[in-house]
Length: 117
Image 1 (cartoon, rainbow, N blue to C red):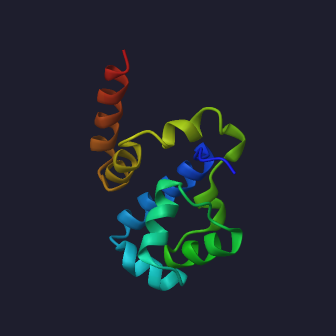
Image 2 (cartoon, rainbow, N blue to C red):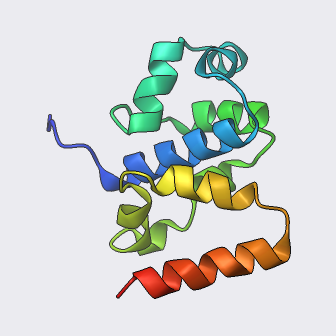
């Protein structure tokens, strides 16, 4: 058994964490709804433990989401999934989702594109 964490598991965990934070649900609350410990949720969110399909659907229900949304586009695992696993990306996505003013979102995109140098 390998000690290497799979980037896809990290990306799925990042989407779980992002959605949980967006809804302002604690790890303990998510754990209670999904029937696991909060420590297990921590492991899922870090990608240390792989989420089974059945558990992913339970988590999705608590997060008012779908399993597909939490899985994401797995065909792009070489690119986008690795980016989602980068430090700060989940927080950035969560913050972006919480900007409800279209002009402010557009302005943030302009700044981000300008920084990519």
